[in-house]
Image 1: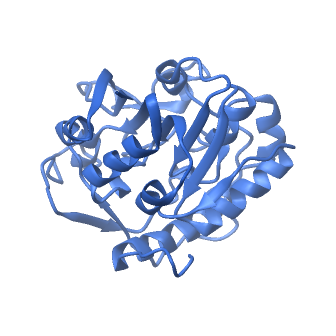
Image 2 (image 1 turned 30 degrees about the vertical axis):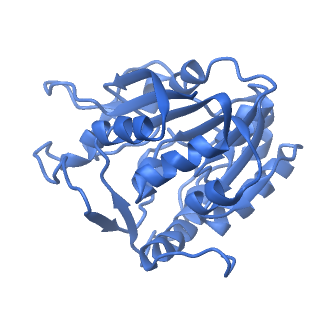
Length: 289
């Protein structure tokens, strides 16, 4: 990380945790660049909320190793920039882009620092699947997003529902839904391995050594109201709010099971039979005036 980018101790340890986790996650995945030349990694929910983005300048926040960023450019026609806190993720994204025979800017930066300092402007800002919990000051981030959007530009978020984190493996309430100012501090897990191929569409392989992450990551809980009110406070207009009773790709809870036998539903997870549905994902589209 550049010394000009200020990080709190929690952010720096989170960076280290993601560095280690990202290397493990990519070790599970075969031939990503070659696969991405022919296929999009996006799920239908993101594609639906994004709409037609051909020719638009798109900023992907917390882009990780860039698989979705590359898909947005190669298969959906946007001109993309990706930003991530993990230097290991950014290096992997650049490598995968080269393997996919394309180039696009992947920037190593902390999201709020980037939003407050970049001179670039975008038609779309996109965040998905584990973006919001790392944004400790959500209102500052939404103001930053409003800053980098052109007039009429949109923020599109598809995120794991904050309610999903409240349950343990037996679906008993574990952590509070309302937890302002609280850090939830655990190492980034090998969720790609736990997904059993659902996050490895290019081909899945097991790690050669046991996964151990000594670094904690520090996330915060934002309720749906927190998300919506942060966008309103930034002067943005909520255009769409969606919830889904499944989790795309990630087995958020070890007791979740595949939604069904079809190829797509084998990559979606729901509570086992006999348990009621709960919201596991939330989507928001907001427009800058």
